[in-house]
Length: 365
Image 1 (cartoon, rainbow, N blue to C red):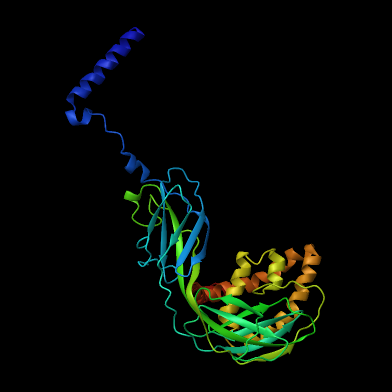
Image 2 (cartoon, rainbow, N blue to C red):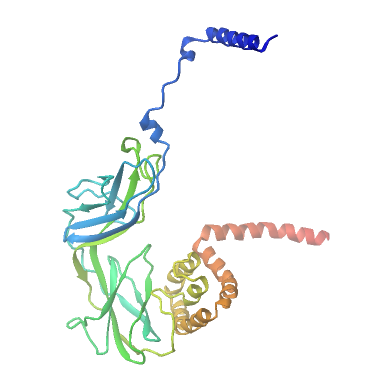
């Protein structure tokens, strides 16, 4: 049989088979609608989100333009609690506010400036001297959105507060006590220190990138990115509590040291950054389990007296970083388990269940 004849017969067979199919099955399926095609796209969220006040009742939110293909707009979510974006008071509309792709900033105006209640005075717990610094620990109070740490070479009270202070923001789930480093002080100088709680109405916001607004029901859906990093902004009058009890001490001088806002000197030197995940893990353990009780605070105060010197030695001898990281692993594992109680409990139960089996095998041997 000639090759050309094969092709003719094959074509005839296909034609006969199609003739037996229902007419609907022979129709060419319509092309996918552009909206449906876009529904499978999941863009990346915008980055570089920040905020500032342009007026007492107006918050300006800016972000870096998104680079994912197919994006047609942005959505700005806002609210009065971190992670809860159900705001409805801005003149621009209720959350989320739709922003055209041509813009990478927007204003939320008409925000309430009614101040919150004045918080009660916190309690200053300890003042641990360091080289040109103090490690300050204080008890948190309800209603505070931050704390102001005043310091001066002369004594002071509520009637005459010094103009030298640092502000520390609230973060995450508020522990019963907070700790930070008051740095940049003169060495071997006597200082007075006191703390005041701050309260200010705060607006929290996040931004998403949207492909097709009609098919984007929520952040993280097919047509809308997950939330960007959150930004927050105090709005309206700042309320200051009465001062805490005052403490005084003399700073020390220990040569060049590493002074960080939230400590963890040795881990930071070993891992190279205070933002390293293992450093943040140890910091969370400190805030939850150490500064919340007297023995833990005593240990932390001791560590902040000696840790900077050890950290400086690690920085001066980089070959020490690997063995120090290895030495820190048991502490990191313990901290992780303490911060994840269900996992720790499951491991204990699994160990208890396997122990009888191990004993049986040992007795048979």
